[in-house]
Every structure is written in C-alpha cells, then in structure tokens.
View 1 (cartoon, rainbow, N blue to C red):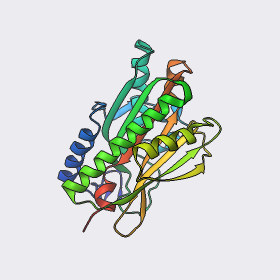
View 2 (view 1 turned 60 degrees about the vertical axis):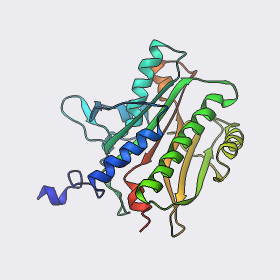
View 3 (view 1 turned 180 degrees about the horizontal axis):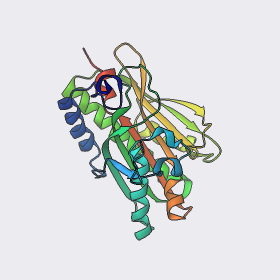
Length: 258
C-alpha cells in the first residue's frame, strides 16, 4: 500500500515533540531575524527559474503552484518584494519549514524526502570590500552556534570541534581572505579549510559549517552561500543575498549523546 511504500507520505524519523522543541530553539537563536510562517506551496517554477535546478525535484500541482522544496527561494521572493519598496533596506528573514524534494534519497541516518530546516536570508545593497556578505556570514554562523549550544544544553546533544569549509571562486576574488579574518575573530575555535568553488548555483561563495560527533566524525550540517536571486528579481545588480540552512532533524539523529 502507498502508506508503507511511498517515502513522500511516511512520517519523519524524528519525534514530533523533539521537532517542535528544536523549532523553538532555532527561532530563539535567530532572534535578530523576522520569522515568517510560509505557505506549504509556492509559485510554480520558483526553484527552477531562480536557481539552476530541475523542476523534477519538486512536486507540482495542477493549480500553478508547487510544494516548497527550498524555502530559501521563497524567502528570496519576499526579500525582493521588500527591496522593491525600499531599495536601501536591509531585509533579514528566517523560517522553519518542512520541505519536500522528489529526488532519490540516500540511506544515511535521518535522510528522507521531507525534512525540516531553519533557513536564514539577508538581502540588501552591496557594500565596499564585500562588507554586506562578510557581515551576513558572521550573523548566520552566530545563529547556528547559538542553536547548537542550546541543543547541547537542553537535549543532551554531543558535539565538538566546529569546522567549516570555505569554498570561493573568481566571482568574489577577495572574500576568502576577508572572511577568514572575520571568522577567526568571531569564532577562534572554528577550524577553516579552503576549497575552490566549482558551481553555477552559488555566486562566488559557499560555506559548509559543521561539527564533529562523539566518535570524531565530521557532519556538515549547515549550507551557506551568496546568490544572485534577489538581484534578478529586482533588476538591480547592487542587491545581494546571503542565505543558509541547517537540517534540524539531523541534530538529534547525528549528534545524540547516548
């Protein structure tokens, strides 16, 4: 029967009470961001038109909408709407959302077709010396550190040795040096590894942030990057977007202290 064979309808591996508690921790950690409660659906094509991804990854409806598969795209729509009203604004939004993606999933612990993320978005006009991007990256990393600290205290999650992978290319040629200085100043305990970014999805910067579990295994649980989506939507090349997400359901599944 479909209930047992279709992974799009099966319940999550995470207990609902645990999930709700993590939602609260996540939103409290993102206290500097306006929290939006998004619709389960978005305009059709919001993922494949803004980002170079296939429409096959989303569940489309017959009413011109699609089930949200990446809420950072939806946050970009709202950021663009607000910047059209005030092009000098600094928009800071967050949401917690249950996403559904149709591509095949792996058998890794906690991986499923529907999953819960905390997502952050900073959008606004660019500043000299990558100032907007650097400030937003530090703000996002601060949210995730507060969340991980709170989850360790309240849910007994065990993690250590935070680290990040700093991936850049010529689209933002000087940002790696500027970010390394800023990250070392704000998070001296975070180990940094640099790699070349080979991607058309991100605009010059992608950061993978994570921690090691009690067995010493590194888990890259945060994806953070710079995107041109808001610049596209506002037809203003000065507009920047820094967006990121963390897999909330992965926290108890990967970092359990038991």
